Length: 326
Image (cartoon, rainbow, N blue to C red; front, side, top):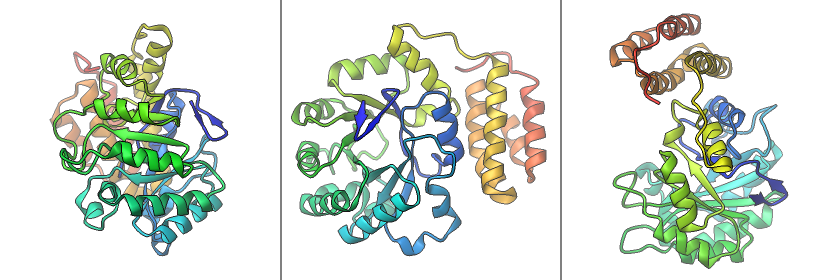
């Protein structure tokens, strides 16, 4: 799949997720074959970018190319400035967020709330693409509500104003993350435009991949929650799409090494206090996927220092549960 001058090495992309797709997680997902790993959502108010949280959402030295940064906001001029500054700091692709359903975002008329106002959508897209010297992509939903699925209208606006690729989550803002994603609207979006379209939502199992690709005709698939606790899923699913056969899973020891390396990179980037806190959710997902009990997770969550947290995790991984959940 082509996004501007960049040829992605895989049809499988990591979905941007608030509080999750930080540099260490993007790194490990790219390591195992994610064709693109976009940053967490960054506010368009550049006056807030001096915070550690915002700094960690920008590209980092040594991060694998292409580096994609997602921005969110409602004012076209501010969005353009945010895009320009992101590029100065190393972004090679700018992604406009019109897909986030969170109340704190939508209450400010940003994220998926923007889909209610196609004229503002057009103004933002025009401002960002005019300013940006790199490709601009757009992430959206199928619409604001089930009675107002206007993704095709927004997709045509995007194509007319130089958006390089679209990713569409198969739910409306009203749906949030409840129920099941629907792919009919995504199929219609793909038929309505010529630019690359990426499907997102409920891509959890190997059967989902082939069905969605065949049914919608999209150019790529965006994996989100299914990658939590198993970033190696990209490697296995890439092979499945290439050969039609799902390869053998990684060994327990291989997974253990990946997990420890990931957690150490979290500590290295975020520091002692914040690093330990952020690592807990990833440790929880890893241990859940491997079949450990909730009690084991709680024990590890009690450690307050990086070295102690890693040591406790190594001790746990040294005693595999009877059955892994893969």
